[in-house]
Length: 274
Image 1: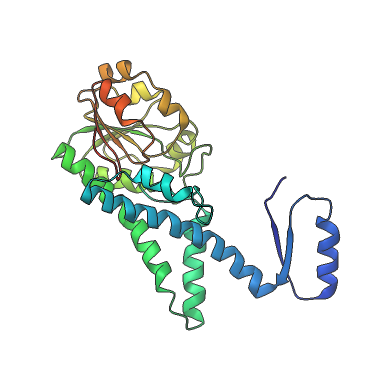
Image 2: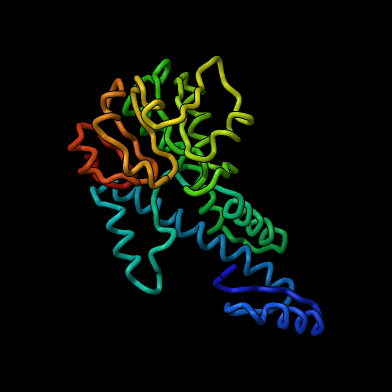
C-alpha cells in the first residue's frame, strides 16, 4: 500500500483530526479538503489523464496526415517535466472502469451546475472515434471482412488485468462481427471471463490458448492490448501460421522494423507503415 497521495474530503474538524491520525504512518502526502473539493479532485485527475490520451490520439491523426511519428512526438513532449511521459500512448483509445466513468461524471457535474465544460465532451468524443478509425484501418487493409478470419490478441482494457469493462477491444470485436468476420481471440488473463459474458454469433467467435493458435489461417492479426508477451512472439512461427502476414497494431506495441524483417505488412497508429 504505497499511494502517491491521499485525498480526503471531510465536513468537520473532528473528522479531519481522525483521518490525519489514521494516515500518519503512511509515507504519502495527505490532503484533507472539503467534500466538494475532494470530489472534484477525483474526477479532475482522471479526466485530465483521459484528456492526455485523447490529445495524443489527435496528434497521431495529424502524424498520419503529414507523415510524422507519434511515438517520437510523445517521447519529445514527454521529456518536458511540465508534461511528463505518462498517458501519451496513442492507440485504439482508453477504457476500464475509472477513466470513462469519472470523465462522464465530471461532464454531468459541470452540466448540473450550469458550467459548459465542452473540452471534456470533446475528450469523450475523440475516444469514441478511436474504435471506428481502427476498424476502418482493418477494412481498408482487407477490403471485404465477410468470412475473413481475423486473430485478435488482447481483450482486457490494459495489460496486467482480466478487467474488460469498457475495453475498446470489445467494441472492435462487435464491429468486426457485424461485418461478418470470423474472430479467433486470445488474451493471457481475460478469456475465462469473456467466455461467460461474450456471446458467440453463428460460430464466428472462438478462443485459443496461444497467440499462434489464434493466428492459424488468419487473414490479419490485431493487437488491442499492450501485453508485453506479444512483443516476444516467434515471428517466423506466427507468419507460417497465418494465411496473410498482416499485423494491425492498435497499441503501437511492436517495432515496425522487426515485423517488417519477418515478412509482415504492418499497420499501426500515427506511425509510418512498415
